[in-house]
Length: 270
Ligand code: NDP
View (cartoon, rainbow, N blue to C red):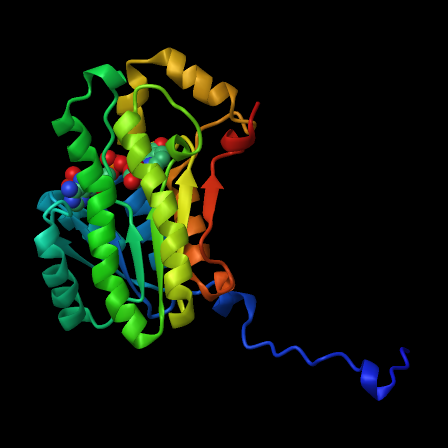
């Protein structure tokens, strides 16, 4: 038996959380852009398993409708094009009027384009930046204003390995995702005093339509990606989903301003 003098008695740790409650999203309202397909849909699915209520957005109503059917009664959709920046305040307002405060925002909607840099027109470049960067900022600002007023909230960006190292033929995409990485750090530092956390997930090579489009015509690229991934396989969209559940939950309450690679070791592979 240990014999502690009064001055050595350890501070009593308060266990407010069991592991189930620490990782739970019970009752939280989550807005996921591009949540009808691919990685966004799996984030929605995993968050539903964790107890959350889900709002997904996208441009194709048929895709969203089908997704909500699969997600179940705690999921709803709003048709919205994130590049229509002037619509985003109204979107957030309508969601909150119908469903209550948005606790967590996941900026997932994104597009890619593979072209040698010299063939990328200003229009091409702007299109990618508008979706992957300008829209993320505008929607984040709309949600963060409300989160800050409520002194509670979490924001997750979906970055990419393209922000970490030079992948050829994705100059606009890499610029947009590198922009997100900078935004995460600034917003985390501005919003921390208001109890709002901001983080990114950087997926490695994940099996979705976007990746299949980028890889199917280019077996060399696919082999290069696999060869520098120590785990030797591509990721599943649910690998990103569970990482998002963690970052959104109270288990990550002291984590802000980071970009978490979920990549089978791709970013440290030789
Ligand atoms: P998908 O193309 O499968 O899904 C993209 C989703 O975004 C769709 O649901 C699409 O719906 C939505 N979307 C696209 N443009 C808009 C828009 N203007 N307004 C609203 N919604 C939009 O791609 P992934 O699931 O693979 O990608 C999701 C995120 O993950 C992206 O940010 C991507 O950059 C990132 N990522 C993916 C990787 C991978 O390996 N797959 C690797 C690294 C990052 P709709 O067309 O109906 O609008």
